[in-house]
Image 1 (cartoon, rainbow, N blue to C red):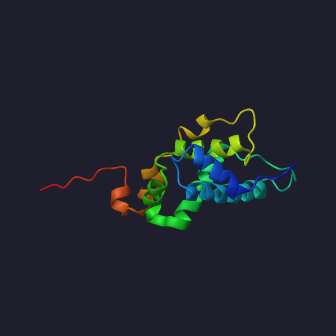
Image 2 (cartoon, rainbow, N blue to C red):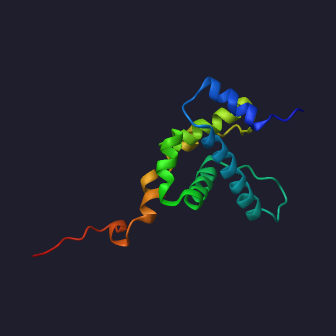
Image 3 (cartoon, rainbow, N blue to C red):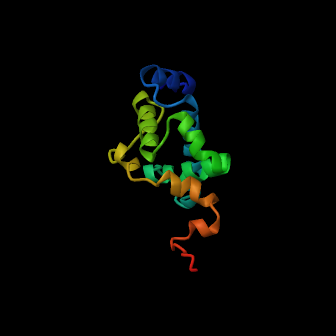
Length: 141
């Protein structure tokens, strides 16, 4: 079987659907590689290849984004056209449909619908502790 060239495949995707920047596809590929390594490390005793689920990939995306972009993550993602976790699902399934990624019978775009809030995942970690607290402090006079 002929392996699909990543760059050619992304160019085909972008020619049909330009909602997301090329860099978003590269980032998803990198986040998937990171997530696969982590999932396989957790299951190394079984020596079987474990499938990465949508929620696992979202966790990998969060980890890589915070490492790579820190407090600028939301700005970078917005530049790429990515505003919600469901956008990552669209990117993943574009890659599935062109043959870059495989899916199981249970994988769907819905796996990405109820991911995390970008504010909670990418902005709050950089807020001062007083602002992150769930309790609202009142000032008394």
